[in-house]
Each structure stands twice: as structure tokens, then as C-alpha cells.
Length: 272
Image (spheres, rainbow, N blue to C red):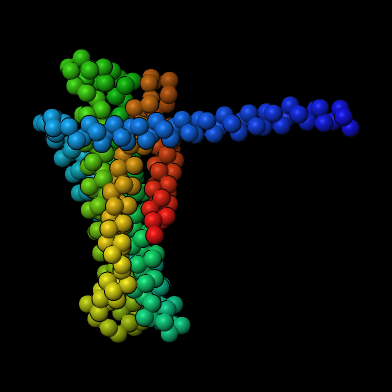
């Protein structure tokens, strides 16, 4: 009996060591991520940051984030409007509780689905391009060339992308919400589930919204866009040489971006 307990002790120690090592690594990466976010904000607030090259890069990335993602956002709004809003209206009509349409849409769509979907759209349309661009920067010596020219890579590559993603997330979130609500109403009206006008439908949704619903969901979209940009930039710039295959950056960046999206969403959900 004593021998068995002695044999089990090394296994327990290894398990605790593995758990402790994973926890330390997770906390280390979280602190690095938070320090990067704070550094980006501080650099962006400097008076001389938004000069010619940074402004040009910001406009280019913002165009890529918003205009090139517009079709995907509208298509997602059509699908979500058909699958979510029309189904919610249908089942509420079946139970005779159509007066709760506004509350259900606000809770499910405005507070939860739209910010998460916007984050995923951002990564799919613009985040992958950022991963590939910045993944090649260090391996091909582009970062070294910027430093030789006296340009700060953080200010030129990370700051404009972070704020372009944040602003683009707000724009895409607005478009996604409007397209989803419009599609859901049109489908419900075509199926005969609602008899009121689109203005009455909008009034139901607006009456169900509280003051926080006009503030927190937009802030959540902006924060999620900022977090996705930092996750993609940090993952791309972490590739040091050709030995780290470029194909591995996309799944690695997706996992980190997804974690950032759900962490931000959870933090905002804690706000009463």
C-alpha cells in the first residue's frame, strides 16, 4: 500500500507541474496581449502618430475591412434574418406572445449575435490578409527595412490596423443589424406571421431596448474589432523565419481571435 502511494506521488507532481506550467504560460500571454493593447492606445494618442504613412495605411485597411466585407455582411444578415428573426416571430406567434418580439430580438440579436458575427466576419475577410502580410514582414526582412528607414513598425503596421478594424466593426455591426431586421420582418410578413407595418416592428424593437443597449453593443463591436486586429497582428509578427510555416498562422490566428471575441463578449455581458 505504501509503495503504491509512493508511485502515485510522481504522477501527481507531474500533473500539477503541467497544470502550473500551462497556467503560467496563459497568464504570460494574456499580460503580453494587454500590454500590446495599452501600447497601441498610448502610441495612437500621440500628436505626431497620424502622419502621412500611418493615415494612408489606415484608409487602406479601413477600405479593406468595410467595403470588401460589405457583401459578406449583407449576405450574413439575410441568412440570420431568415433563420433567427423569422423563426423567433413564428414561435412567438404560435404561443400568442408576439408582444415579446422586441425583447427577444434585443437579447439575442443586438446584444449577442451581431458582435460575435462581426468579429468572425472581420477575421475571415481582413484578419487572414493581415496574418499573411505581417507573417511575411519579419521573415522577408521588411521590418528591418522599416527600422533602417527610421519608421516605427508598431506605429506603421499595428496602430492603423487596430483602429481600422475597430471602426470597421462598428460600421459592419450597424449594417448587419439593419439587414437582419429587415430580412426577418419581410420573411415574417410574407408568411403572414405579422400584420403590422415595418415601422410598428421597428417601434417594438426600439421600445424593448434600454439605454445600455444603445451604448454597450456598439462598444462591444468596437472592442471586438480592436481585439481581433491585435490578435492577428501579434500572431503574424510572431513568425520569425521561414521554418515556421505560413499555413499554420491562419488556424493559430483564428483560435486566438475566437478566444478574444468570446472573452470580450463575456466581459461586456457582466455589465448590468
